Amino acid sequence: MPQTKKINQNEINAVAWKACDTFRGVVDPSEYKNYILVFLFLKYLSDVWGEKKQKYEEQYKGDKERIGRKLSRESFVLPEGCSFYDIYNKRDEANIGEIINIALDHIEESNKSKLEGVFRNIDFNSEGNLGQTKDRNKRLKNLIEDFADPRLDLRPSRIGDIDVIGNTYEYLISHFASDAGKKGGEFYTPAEVAILLAKLLKPKSGDRICDPTCGSNSLLIKVAQEIADQNFSLYGQESNGSTWALGKMNMFLHGIENARIEWGDTLGNPKLIEKDSLMKFDIVVANPPFSLDKWGADDAAGDRYRRFHRGIPPKSKGDYAFITHMVETMMEDTGRVGVIVPHGVLFRGASEGRIRQSMIEDNLLDAVIGLPANLFFGTGIPAAILIFKKKRSTNDVIFIDASRDFVKGTNQNRLRGIDIDKIVKTYSDYKTIDKYSYRATFDEIKENEFNLNIPRYVDTFEEEEEIDIAAVQREIEEIDKELVEVRKEMDGYLRELGW
Image (cartoon, rainbow, N blue to C red; front, top):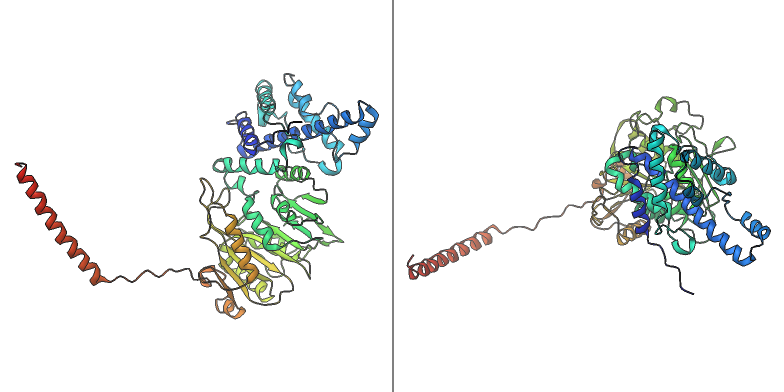
């Protein structure tokens, strides 16, 4: 029996990018990627369901009762008449937008425990987003036909281990970065950075893992993938409704059922609560929006969970608000935090300086790692990773300057496997390496007034080779002599030629 040809991620990307042509100039890129990814999700569900149904039909030779019973026990249910192919057959209907919405509602209702609310933020019948009826119907028909492309056969036997939503999401964000700017990049942590964070935090079997700004859940999933026996529980919260929905879909596609992903503002309305207190986690990881303005400083003093007892960050910069929340949700014995921050977090003064000092004095800070510039979509500024831990065996802090180790890309720079391994090993060894890392004592950090700017600790200055002026002068004189001889020789040749 011939083997089924595996799908190539580039083929999926090509179809998704072609489908985007339907919306260009009509819908903002940060919005139309949601229409594309919801349709990709629907196509994937339909192909998975179709392959399972075919398998049971062959196995039970058309016994509808047994086939129905087997399908009802699957991890999701695709209701009759709601598949991509049902919608494809109705693509010329005058109310096609409404037909798509109804199909999505039925899918959500049939899988309530996993998909409740996932499609509430997207409307395929929206005049505001997709235009008046005639134009809207034309665009939706084009979109449906794009996804009927034979290359986009997403049956499990073809896609193997491809992370369909995650990889395509990254592809779309990278292409939309110039249009969507920071708005598009703030939800997505590049895969290499997510892998680095996961390896630094060393997740183990049984861990409770949280991302309070979880976006599409790519970072949470990468951390979970480090646990071989899949014995973990995942928690997240995301403030953007459309991104929260994509994150839920991403979890669904990865077959992760032990995940609780909440929709809401983590700083103003934390939803991960246990016995009227903030839930505690073994690992807390995040790539929060950099220096978020208007994050809720006015309400922080009355925070019922007392997260800001070290001080309230400035109104226009929410970095330490996220860091504080994360530190306060660490387990007492096993807790560790990994957070991506802009470099200003390392040295800015006033209330931020006081919070930073308090955390260092409480012996929570474990590592400061400088990353290369231009790793993240929507911003070229370099970032750093801060690692916090409870129950530390030292009050030293390891500083790592990894800013020079990367491969340059067309739009974004990337960390290579060797760069990730070098950072992880250096952190694990916790030793000074000339021009790369430095193990600083508490007293040294105190001497620096709790300023964590990496160049204060890791000296990367390269001394220039001493120049021998006399030798250079002799070399110039020799060249001058040779030049005189060459000119004489040239004059001789020219005379011979009668010039």
